[in-house]
Length: 272
Ligand code: HPA
Image (cartoon, rainbow, N blue to C red; front, side, top):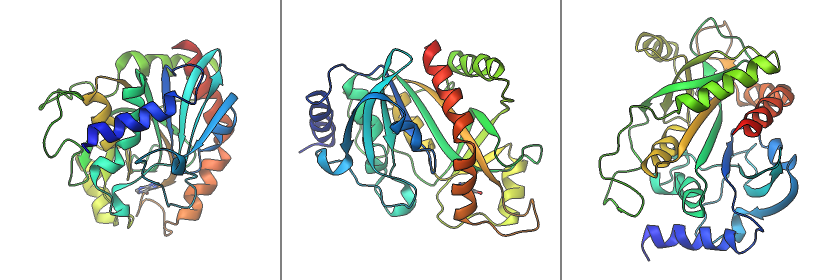
């Protein structure tokens, strides 16, 4: 069975279980999965119940799709994602985004936990992604192109929609939340970066670094979805502070800011 047909099967399975097709998809980063539980009239689908869906195995990534309502809009929230560092094929990593695309989602909000490369940031800040640098050593469009998804050589001039970034800014102002913008560097992981790698990333123009989002954003643009990216700066990147990095800090920071994060997300969704 072709990859396209597998994705379509998954999208059809979702459609058969929900009363209304969601307009907006949200991929929730490490420690940010709570947002899915805040939706009204939720239909919860553990990934294991959806055909061909790759399961997530990372601590802090729950592994479920929740379709529900907030601010009068129907949302598809993904708590738990697959990462390249798990040894997954790039197509597995982008399966969920593809399925939302075939389901009919036109606006995709990608969130993640990221290290702060820009020394002007502090732990707990939220950053609007203006653009990305793909250093993951792969691309989700490698291999035969299925035109039913999109073009062979899709444009990446504006991966992150300027219209959606503007909406995020207005919501940040409305809730008095400082919302810096920056460039997200996507790396393979799973080891954190060395201080030398962080200096390199700063030199090439990165403000934040993380191990997700880039493949999903590329696949979403391939399908002509509008993308917004928000990073939670869960820690300062390696070498910025005189202390080692650790996943527990990442999770703790994400949990600490979840109130702000939820308020921002709900505000943005209300404006879409
Ligand atoms: N580096 C890469 N990925 C991350 C980091 C980091 O410092 N923090 C959270 N995800």
